Image (tube, rainbow, N blue to C red; front, side, top):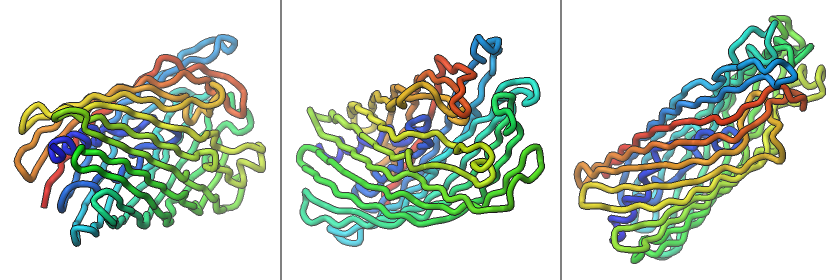
Length: 372
């Protein structure tokens, strides 16, 4: 039963956690480390958000249009068992990101021309040691690169209208630590994993309408430390309950370039700590096919006022997954996730100017697993 049920647990791994808390995209999943035997995993996700809004009625209520671009995410995982107690894994993913671009003329609209493009790449090397069949520990190092380009456009930014900050890519190292408890006879596994914050020094160029407002400088940015709890357990023959809880400390992720902060007294970011939760059930139908369904949510901030660079506030989602065992060595799984994005009020410098209501995102994913 254990082999059949654990095969179900990864069905939704190919759907992304985009539009979760903060800038989360991959959720920093390390499940490949718990696969049986030597294993390689390829992951692909396509995210199609629809985030549109309108100026508040006091400003005329003009429609803003979709501000979120479609994007893709890729992931790769490799796990190797050195002995029956010691195993290793290498995971490549895109942990954080943003693709927000406001349509409109910055000279005649409140937020037209505003954009935030954030890209990240990470490679994590992990080792796992099993003290017994039940208890194990895991940990390792993570190399991560981050870059960003931010433009503030529109009349709502007043003297900062036309600001552009370019943050060149920087690589830095963090660490991962965790432990797991397992009961193979009932396919039970509970794993707790801590990801440290990673501090980046980003070479920064700042201009307003192409005119430099500060010398080229360095902006220190911390990607958030986080804690991931995942669990699964067999509850009946060929039936598994699974879930996850993630806490990310985004309150420490503050982007305050010298020129912008000196001139405005503000930071470019307005992110809060938050939780992501998901609970689901998987069912193996026969030797080839399995399916799963899950639902979850991301917590909201303290109020509905948010940065125009991230015009959502919390979310709820439902996911469906299916898995096909091509052979004893290869399996293909796919999933689709529909996300209801929380209503928010875009408020540059705390001044409410636009409402974003009833927005959604559709994510599809594909996961290919091969036993070596």
